[in-house]
Amino acid sequence: MAVTTGGASPQSKAETLAWLRKISGDLATATLTRLEESLPWYAEMPPARRSAVGLVAQAGITSFIQWFDDPTSTPWIAADIFAAAPRELLRSVSLQQTLQLIRVTVSVTEERVAGRSESLREAILEYSRDVAFASADVYARAAEARGLWDARLEALVVDSILTGEADEELPSRIAALGWHGHGEVCVLVGTTPQQFDVDQFRRAARKLGIDVLIGVQGSRLVLVIGRAVTASRPDDSPDIPFIDIARHLEPHFGPGYLVLGPTVAALVDASQSARAALAGFAVARGWRHAPRPVEADDLLPERALAGDPFAKQTLIDRIYRPLQSHSADLVTTLWSYLDNGRSLEATARELFVHPNTVRYRLKRVSEVIGWDATGPREALILQTALILGSIGTTESLRRRPTRRTP
Image 1: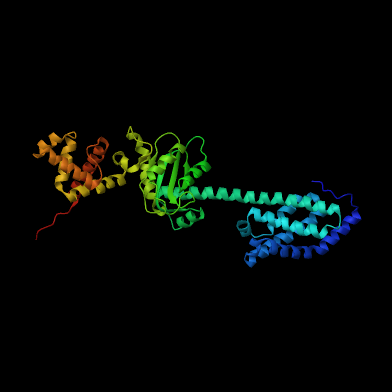
Image 2: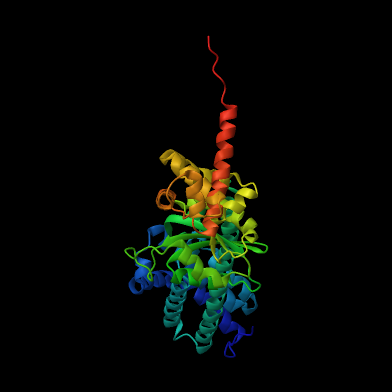
């Protein structure tokens, strides 16, 4: 870049350089005084950071003198200004504040050299423009590096959740990502769209008042969802059910099945929800008319048939054992009702009771476990639970050691 020197002779330029070097210390002192007077954020900084800002200002003045001597050194000298600052200063001082720093430094320098020569004043303005662009480049590179690091860290956290290999560092990694979610969490698994826009996904999440961790694993898209307090959703607003959140996010997924894992108490427990969601996603095609999204617990029969031990245990714990502990008549009535094709009359004849008694017992079944045996889909879930519970009970009886009589 050619610099305008106003036709100054080599002798006058050498004299100007000598004069600039002589007053550089005074310029730095005057700049720091002006910074403290005009920039409130600088005055409020801790002494160590104020000192670091002062180093940047002094480096800027020194670099200008070098640049005025050799304008071809612009790319390197502009970078050297920010090399004088510790790395944490870039994280604590914004780009806007950096530009304010440049403006104050240039103003002080321009005032001091205003009467010296017009060519020197023009050189200061040209150099300040180059430094402003250089500072923008420094912050852009830092933001890009931060974005790449965040993406890798987010992928690592999501992978740890999916594999269940959480370690002691997981909470600190989650905090480093700026996770704003609190309380309950669940995992949503679907397919990755061909044109996946992660920023659009995050904007949709913010509108719903939630925070998300996003993991793209080939054709599979995994979302860890947590409720967050935002401007659009204050702290006292009612919680949106996760299934409703999944319905709002559904258009952002690719075609295919969309499975929502069960709700867990906190993010560190999200692997339980992820395990169920992944198992449900693998067998969702077994339900011909599965809704989108579908809850993983609604796919318990398919998961159990595929050998998912957690689905089997869930069916036994949530259906078979509560019914068995409540009343043996409920288990017997449910077995008979399902075996007889959900016919009240056939069930009543088999049990030698009135059909109204069957109706009453089925109503009690629904009250105890929350599933209604009269629906075809729920009937499949209940029958699978009865089969698994009976097999488990039989096996436990067979394994029970016999007591020897003395």
